[in-house]
Amino acid sequence: MTSSPGFAYDNRTGRPGGRGVRALGLVLPGVRGVQAQVEPYAAAWAAHNRRALATPGRRWVVLGDSMSQAVGASAWDAGWVDQLATTLAAQGHPLVVVNLSATGARTADVTDQQLPVLRALPPAEGTSSPDLVTVLVGSNDLFAGGGVRRRLPAEFARMVAALPRGAVVATLPQPRAAARAANIHIESASATGKLVKVDMRAEGPTSWRGRLAPDFFHPNDAGYAELARTFAPHVLEALGS
Image 1 (cartoon, rainbow, N blue to C red):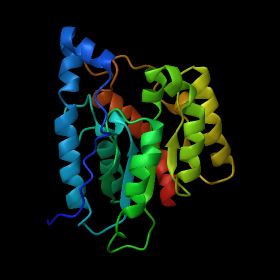
Image 2 (image 1 turned 90 degrees about the vertical axis):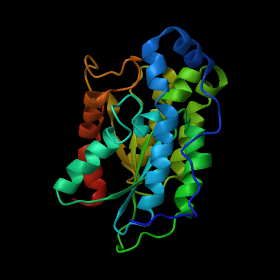
Image 3 (image 1 turned 180 degrees about the vertical axis):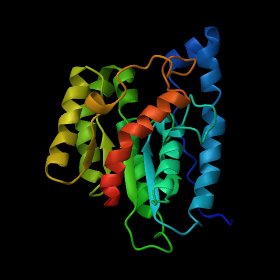
């Protein structure tokens, strides 16, 4: 399989990791072990994307943060994206995954970094079907605190306005005021038919027991299987099934 040598996106935000995570990594082996996945997983996705852009077929463009990078899983291709892609292919929906997510990404990064890359992608070969686009983001905004958290609802509004019609977007399940205010923008866009909503509050895992990586924040393979399960019916809806 050939690759697309002109594609230079590297699945990184350009910001260093948070100070809190770095501090915890110094004393907690589980955090340190999961954080050690970040760079090799980003490199693996960047290499995968170059191959994917030279592969004909309908595309699935993934936007978001470390949850779509598979950080916490046993391998870079063992997260919810690859698990769901395998399920979809078995059901007659083979998709060429182009993953633009980046560990540490905030909602503004999706709008300002990832969406411009999506818009600049060359047309997919061998198909007239539009790209499937999924978005899972917002947790980093909440945990950043301060002004970043306060801006989250406005950043969600800006992201929703910029997303292509039919994008599949997850709500934030955290019971925080900023998350609730941000979710309103997804709900409104879903009600008008612009976006397809994945309601993580009602449909996501009811328990993360046994489904978390050693840092007790990111999912493990079983946790990512739950995310794949949650996204599946909505992705099928977006695909027209």
